[in-house]
Amino acid sequence: MNYNLPSHFSELPVYQKAMDIIILSRSISTYLNQDLSYLNPDGSEDEHIYFTGDIVQQSTNLAPKIISAEQERCSDKKSKHLESLDRLTTRLYSNCRRLEKSNSNGRDYLPILRGELKKFRKLKHHWMMTL
Image (spheres, rainbow, N blue to C red):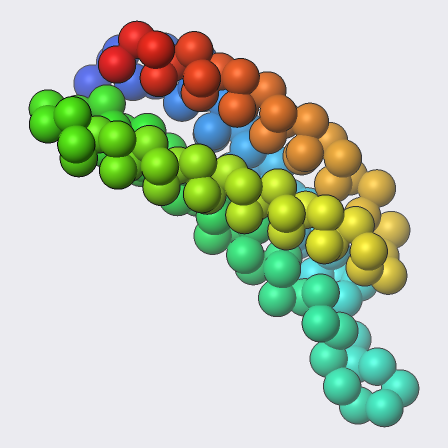
């Protein structure tokens, strides 16, 4: 993903971690989709397949929210971007927990993603103090 950003954005640790999470979530989603795309014996879909798309969508939205918060001048709007970033990380974390209940070998990689999300939350907290 290239947003044509000023160089200081790509140097932000929180932004770098968001980019790592995007790559990791896409890889995990691809792996899980291979296992979960088959129909059940009764012809129904595996309910967990939709969560794989959710983790990709939510992780992809992390970096733009960081950029928006960083560029915003108004403190009220900045706090709304930060709240949205909090909601995204919470949903992403909970969808990882849901996917761990899936019937796939790929679920073993989800604790890695959750660990990266914990690191992201710490980096986000420190970054928010600098805004």
